[in-house]
Length: 620
Picture 1 (cartoon, rainbow, N blue to C red):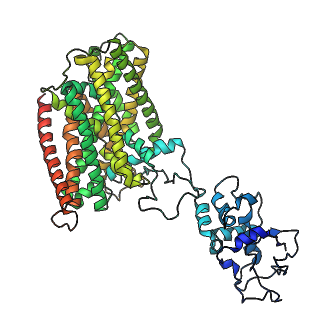
Picture 2 (picture 1 turned 45 degrees about the vertical axis):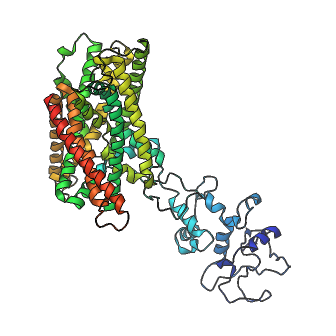
Picture 3 (picture 1 turned 90 degrees about the vertical axis):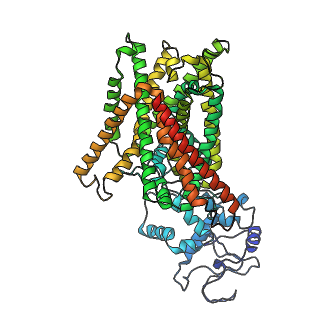
């Protein structure tokens, strides 16, 4: 049996200043210092280390310390106790500069490779039983820092996501909870991402978290910023230069900025309504506030908006593919019917749509984001170069203030560009500090407002009345880089289209098929769902074929008819019912009254805009 290691006088004095630990008192009746009764006396040396070659040591006053040879009456083996305590002292002397530092220093370093305990190549049964008990039994907690060490060890082996998982699988998993709905397929769970504390396992992580802390969150404020940015920046930005020609330069800039602020307010009050009603689903909030009719209306608007987005994406891709083929061949656009391009897209989208695990599309999402980024850079480069080449002279036929004949087309496209309400709730719930969401969202809205205004204004000023519906068609069509970008951008939108299809088709499936029926247990149900997805793709492609004959008007119609109620009417209605009961309020009655009047105003303005713009666009 090894003997306790001598502890230096200076360290013993430091340790002696600590409050008495349970380990400093013997579980047996107190024994006098010179008593021969077996026991453990730790009066002057509460923490001991082992030394295989040492003999009995003496205390500070040369009084012998009895050897640890017997068990406690409670059945605790003294060698295990000494070993459990001794491992806290395995560090150099320079580390013990504070009182009690020798107790907790190594606890904080358990998760580092250099100090993490490693399992030996061969274990004896006794070693296995001892380590197993120490790792799982209550005795491992009955030492200084035991609770914290147990927490760190328990979380040390959790899977840490790589860069692809963090940035794309997590983003796609958010679509599994689009608009707060549980859209995970029973045949293949949509979300595989394991919540991971981004701070890691470190001494800076408090065991008792603040009220603002979400223990299940995976997104820091920075990550939430980029997730929201990816949710908003899409195809709509390419339609804005043409939309500026419909609204006029000054009117378009002011209106686009106001739409950004209005969208921000509606997104924030939607989150407040969710918090007040204590549910996560957009549709459930409507059901609790007004009944099933509003829930069905909200879900129907979500499906319609996604169908409109997908149809616009299909037309956009077909137009770019046709331009690409014309640029590399002797064909003209009149020689190539867009029908064949849309049919080819449907044949490509159908098998991809049958994928039920949306996270398997992470590679496609990665490629799509790269291609979109390259496309935007190319568009800005050639547009700015053209504007500079014209000596900063604007193009012909520009409406500098207001175009009263077609301004309603601009409103629809602007709403189309800002639409991202389906990802607001899941991103807010994925944040580690969800109370910071309004600030992060405001930063995102300001960022994308300036991006939209800049791209729309510079494109319109450069090409004037000759601006095409898709600005890519205004770039030099003989340039190899432009030709390549046309192909890559078309591929990017085509690859991202299944992600937009997923929420709509899952909402339809949940309404048609009973929750108890699963394709995992029945091949009939599985193929019925496959047939539904096939019909959905073909129906959307048909809508795209007819709507694409006037792409700018079709995009504007989708923005007005499907998105105005979803973004600018439903959130104020829900906020009015859940947070603005000023009649029965005991505190903040005036504030709630003002907010209620704002909600009434937004609902009224939204209804008028919906009716007028939809009618006017159909008239065009």
